[in-house]
Amino acid sequence: MTREQLSAKLDRTDISGIGVECIAANGSAVCYFYEDFDGPATGIQRAMKQLYPLMDKGKIQKLTFIERRH
Image 1: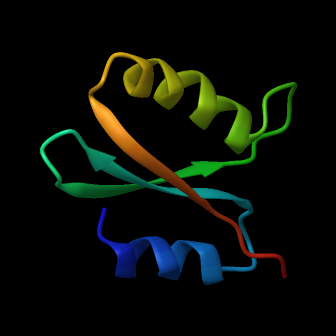
Image 2 (image 1 turned 90 degrees about the vertical axis):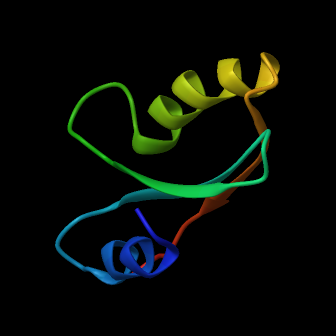
């Protein structure tokens, strides 16, 4: 999703979660939103579990976690 789409999701008050902007090894950027669900894993925990291994493999060069509190 684009940064604008991510901002719109983060601005919503009916859902909570974490936004992530990923810069790939080739320099392209993509944004993801990980919603907080009921259960043991929050959005940020799921994001870290999925994205940190890709960073360790060199596929992602930078991660930025974006959070908004309502």
